[in-house]
Image (cartoon, rainbow, N blue to C red; front, top):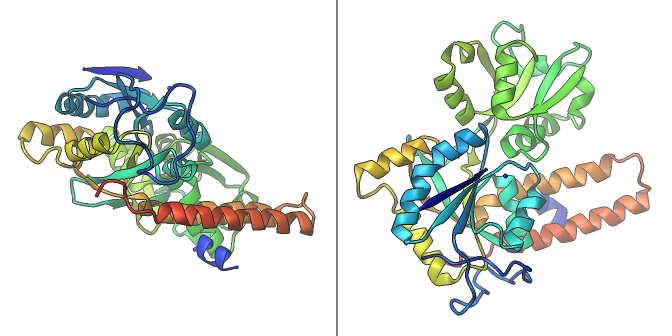
Length: 352
């Protein structure tokens, strides 16, 4: 039975320089490792809560995941509530895991990093697309008739260009383009190049660029593929200026409060899904054109951690309001955080 409810290589050089509930509703102390929770004997809640991010809106997310969650629920013999997670705040997601409001989730790498760093969740699976890919790319697009043929041309100041960037916590929409397309090209303040910087979802950005309401926009190649399917005429107006290095597919994470036995059952059901009958293969196609889920672990998030730590360092280093002593103190704090995070990301998986 399915219920639907709509709501950090900077680290390296910086440091060198029948499912049951998550937690009681009053919360818990973060475990020292993903397997620190007792395997049995804890009080449980029902139903299990499975949250999914909403890159194309809540209704589209629920429609894409409902059949999959229903089948997983049947295999587990456990009711599951499907929750559309609309908040861009990664800390809020980590709090929801800590407070027992979410048991499982499909989220972006950046949001997953916040949950893992907090010690309340662990990566256990990763998407595999219909082409067998376990990665995707951030992109920067423009209208085909914009006159912008290269990224260099789109990064010249004084042209009065309007840039549609992603939400600040969006991994492929903002953080990856910021790091690879701007900072690594010597541009520490992208906003200084443009007349205006807007922020929106991938689909919003693609639409604005195709309609020539902005001059360039961030998104990712998977969302562009979906956009081409939904509105091929509009999508045909777009040209890709820049493509990022490969990004690991967004992970599935579970609460570290779930017993090891429950985690094994979940991973078995999800990573074997679609391998035994054609109907389940069709169900996977509804979820971002998938062919399978494969086992994964926290180390999937190392690239996300690299970028997150670099951005934190950059914000401190560029601040005009901090004294040199204050900057040094905050950089030390970032270095200490990076060390702790590195240990988290290198933990062996709790379920092999």
